[in-house]
Amino acid sequence: MGADGGTIPKRCELVQQKKKKEKLDKHVKNATKWRNCQLTQLPLKKPVIACRFGKLYNKEDVINAILNKTIFKSAAASHIKGPRDFVELKLTENKDFKRGDVKGDDYNDVNQTEFLCPITNVPMNGIQSFLVNWQCGCVYSEKAQQEVKSENCHVCGGPYDATKMVILNPEDEQLELYKLKWEAEKAEKAAAKKEKAKKTAEKMEAAAAVASEGPSTSSDAPGASAPGPSGMASVGKSGKGLFG
Image: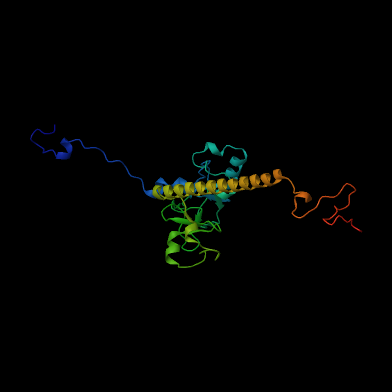
């Protein structure tokens, strides 16, 4: 038996220590975000879209949910109201990605995904950050943007604006910033709409006030003389008639 003089127990054997929680790698934890639609959790298939928060969806599933008026039930997609809230992604397919079950002695690289960066060939698996150009829908890695300096889109050569780049599947801190920006844009649009309605109401009130006054008559005009009983002009101060 232990502790009978034959062995010396170690401290870790005498003191019960708390087990450390197993930490999953970042790309393993977020793997489903890069492979599955956030609305249905089904595998992503073209056409794929991204919302303003950088989440990925199957376009067909989102459109059907909008038409069926069921999208508001989804916590991951209730903020999508129409086409203005998402962009269709121009994705580059990964030729090394093997679809379906791998049979025989074939090696299955779990880090390979269906899509990759067209500039650096980095798989879109969550290890590297990926961006989407909201103006054209082109998708490439953040590494490519850092290494290749350009004033145009890195893929299609179209317009580029750093403020209109969205990180796909961002970290929680960045996600909160996107949500705050979205709320600010909604408030700004609501204020502009309210101001426009106020100006329209003021114009309508002014037009109604002018209409209520009625048109002016010829008798109100200065210097006009009223016709006589026979419809002829009145006699002047000399007492003579018109032909007198």
